Length: 106
Image 1: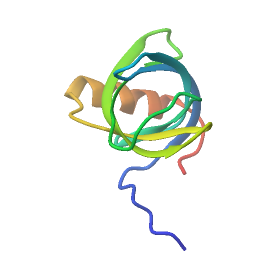
Image 2: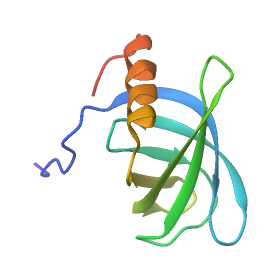
Image 3: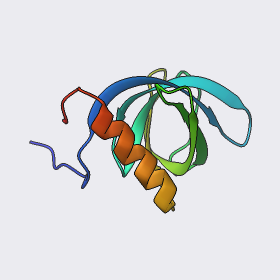
């Protein structure tokens, strides 16, 4: 049984997103989310440990910008992202989003 590396509970969801790397901006979807990171469903290419800027479209229509780095990569599927240096406002926005969703934690 594989060791669980995550220390935060994840919540399954499906939100539109866009992410930016050094080369360009890509459309995506966020499939699961925690205070520590998320999985970004995209065909865009990344490198492990690459710095990424991610914007998530909340159900309210607002965008939340987050910074992080690539923790895992599955070519043609997407990548796992670890958030770095979240502000108090970003943490509060993520907590509010996750508490408002009815899907189960995984």
